[in-house]
Every structure is written in C-alpha cells, then in structure tokens.
Length: 154
Image 1 (cartoon, rainbow, N blue to C red):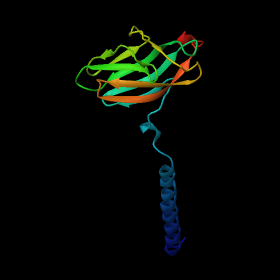
Image 2 (tube, one colour; image 1 turned 45 degrees about the vertical axis):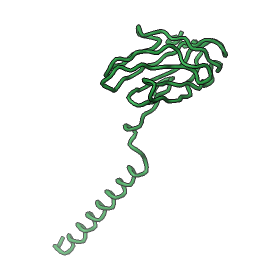
Image 3 (cartoon, rainbow, N blue to C red; image 1 turned 180 degrees about the vertical axis):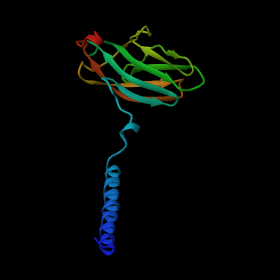
Image 4 (cartoon, helix red, strand yellow; image 1 turned 90 degrees about the vertical axis):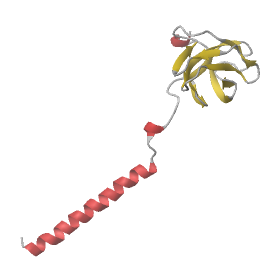
C-alpha cells in the first residue's frame, strides 16, 4: 500500500473512534449513577430528619387498630445525643429513644429497645408515621405494616 492510501484509512479509523466515544458517553447521560441513590433495600423505609437517619423502619402487627412493634435502625450523625420520638401520625408519639452521638440504635431487634405503638392500618397497608429528632426536626413516613408471618419478623 502506498503512503497516500494509508492516510484515508487512518482518518476513517480516527473518525470511527471519536464517534464511538461520543456515542458511549451519551449512554451515561440518560441513566443516573445508581450508586448515589438512596433506597429501601429491605421491607422497611428510609428517611432523614436533620442529623437523624432512619433505616429500614417497619411495623409488625397482627391486626388493624391494635398495637404494633416498631422495627428499624436510628442513626445519629451529630456530635450530640438525640432524643427521638416515634409514633403514628394519628395516635401520637411513644416514649423517646435516646441515640448517643455518632452512633446507631436498633429498635425492636438485636437487643435494642422494644417499642409498641398504637396504629390504625391493617397488615399489608401503610401507616402514616412521624419520627422527630430532638423536638426540632421531624419527618413523616408511610411505614409498611407486616403481619409477622415472615420468620425474621415473627
């Protein structure tokens, strides 16, 4: 091949490489980076109220209009101890849970405090629930009510 014949081939290869790079870059434009998304990886819900993180919060009850066990994890991201109130939006808060600074407290499992709260929702439904941290900030969540048939919630 002559030198003149090689130049157009190199130009075409370079052009194809640039176009492929542009096309592949466009793929990431249309789909978000999923490692940055917060989501509920289990049966419960997540939320944040100021320095308080609520993780995998759910209720376990056998009936509507009865008592439910609160299950979840509370994460304190601040340098101060937090007093956290948990309760149904319609029934009010339960006695507070103390979460030490820069730590987590499990509620309803793993040796954490056991909380029973009155609820209106039946198993399989969502209960309007309020979590407040230190009286300053609060978050309203729609928390699933499970009936305890799964072994991990029995």
